[in-house]
Every structure is written in structure tokens, then in C-alpha cells.
Length: 175
Image 1: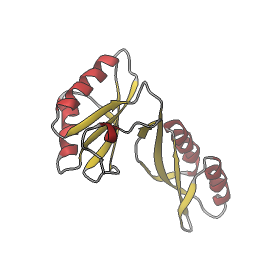
Image 2: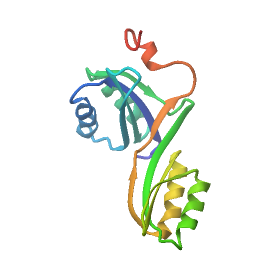
Image 3: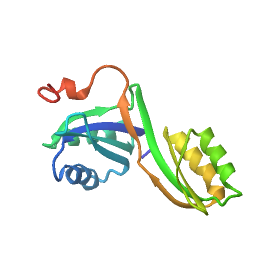
């Protein structure tokens, strides 16, 4: 693929058994690689939001959106890439940090606005939230301490502004 641009897609789906498998199956069946996939219930418990990041050119993105819109359980597909949106990712890292290294790990965590979420005699677990670049930079800083375990959520994103896809979709989210 000559243009390997990152695209962030927000997909509202029915919060039902098997929907994640059908959506991810659509990607694999057509040979599209998912860079990141996060799913969670929205303010309406019958609806979940999937934040999917993929790489490819604009034609690939158009095909993905077209295929997603064909799936019965999909309520709304929103390409956030060319709009203003906020993105965040969460990482938790357990590093080696005996009593001599704790202060240094804590100082780096503070620079990245991280929190110590677990501690024992030989390790510290640090949580950091931020844009992908910030999370990546924090991970690189922690490598010198010896990363024992690392978990990342992948990107979640929300459009800036007042319009909610749930509110613009007839009958969904109305109280």
C-alpha cells in the first residue's frame, strides 16, 4: 500500500452477543489488518462503541466503511480521521524497581502524569494515559528498568463538539 495513513473509525453497534466477531470477521475476510480495536458499552446499554484504527489509503478506508455499513448490527460508522477528535490510550507497565530505582521510576512517571498502581519489593506497576505518542515515549523510558509485563488498551477516540452519533440516529439514546 503506497499510502499507509492511519485512520480512526468510530463504529456504533448493537450491544449483542457475536457482534464483535462479525465486525472483526469482516476485516479479516477482506484482508484488512486492524491496528487497534477497543470496545465498550456507551451511555445507552443497548449500544457499544468500537474504536478501530487501520492503516491504508483513502480507497481502503472507503471500502471498510462501505462494508461496515452493510452489517446488520452496525448503527453508525464515523471516520474521525479528518475531523477534530480526542484520542487516548492506557498502558500499565510492571518494571523492575528495587528500593534504589524506585525514586527514578516515580520521577519519570510523574513527568508523564502516571500513577503507581502496584508496588512490591522488586517491582512497580505504573499506569499512564495519553495520546499514542506519549504512551510510546513512556514505554521507551521504562525499557532501561526492565519491563516485566506491559498491557495496552489501544486507542479510544471521541469527536470534539456537540453532536453525538447516538443522538443523530433515530430512536437510539432518546429518553
